[in-house]
Length: 569
Ligand code: F6P
Image (cartoon, rainbow, N blue to C red):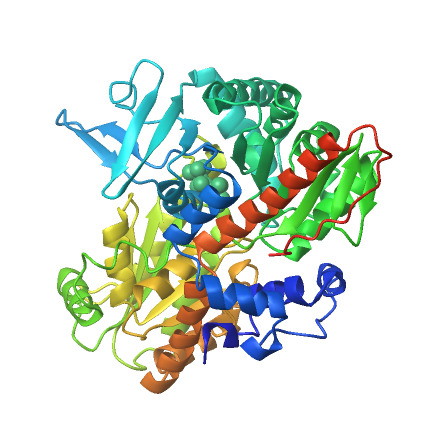
């Protein structure tokens, strides 16, 4: 089956929608099934077939060429709170470089390498200052490519209010359906506004022209698009919201909803992971602000400015850079079994997360316990390896959550452990990507159990790691990824009995079935990779930019609303 043949997937459906007309996209936003799908190349429109034949798959080179051709080499500025590499001073006095556990960084870093622009981020490492120049800049060289990291320094008070407070105690629980109440403190909101302005100023200082292309990332910077728009009316501002956008009723509990929506509408395009999140956003805007919403064009017009709203499911680098340095999957399995002192017939289940209450870790542990109860000696010993990277630990809810997870692991291990062997291995420290990829390659099963997740790139990384076409992905249906990765075993993480049964099925899955599923999954992620994500967004931005320039040239002539003809994904 060709990559496009994995046409039951959501990404393919979105692509298909872009090719078969706006009506299909609107149907998708309304949650109705598509009537037409681009399952085979012959189903595609002429233009799409030409695009497919002439350009082929999206790669770093194609993304670079797209920028050169369509944006005339304009510099791309990425604004993201998390920096792609963190300089830390170790207790022994050395400076080490750490790659943070962040889906956003996983996705954006390869794009940045392809675009050679500037990444503006919070300088959070203990050795970041001494590793940067006086303006907070450091060149990141990665073999064939380089880009600039521009660090912004925050005071403790700013970080506490903006990052820990408003971003992660208010917006994060507001947007995730995971039984956690948002906390809205006025003092956090004030810091959020202040820090957003500081980052907007840092972007402005890097712009170098009056119409920069800025990619604003995530819920940390909802106010920045408007701040930039005021300064650069002609800028192209693409904002991508990595986490879910809640339904309009839930969003309306936010006391600062008007300011947040107005802030985001400074963007040229606001992107979300799924059509449902786009729909929720349009509803929130419709209920809150005086705007005109184009239900067919999927745009919002406010004070003569248009903002497009589009789904762009994010993805990963393909084929990725971590596999190359690792031994093959069989050797990785050997190594991991040896290190964990597992017998040769042990089955390995792997999960990799930040220690975050949205990831469903407690439910996952209960599932493992249920599996051990129901099938004590099913097919040899079971080893469940959980990487739980500490995250946002200054927030009490996160500390309590980490403690609960550790207690549960100890309880289950005490109940089922025999001698040296314990069924659960909790690695609660930061792991660098090669270590994580080695675990993926060693696993019989990878289980992603998020209770709510914008996309979840662990699922895609696992697929990328399995060039042996083996291993089974079990994936929560509440992730954005589940809409695309339909050959995974899709589960409801709250249904402990159901998941335990699926896990048993996964552990016993015949090799041929593993291969069929993994091949389809790999074809899907290979085609819908992160270069396509960035490329499609930048192409839409280019068309918008050209249209706006045309409007400026035609100024004085009567204004007519021109339909936007860009792709829907
Ligand atoms: O995927 C959501 C997200 O907030 C990313 O935006 C972020 O990079 C990641 O989770 C990790 O969180 P943090 O940057 O707070 O460590």
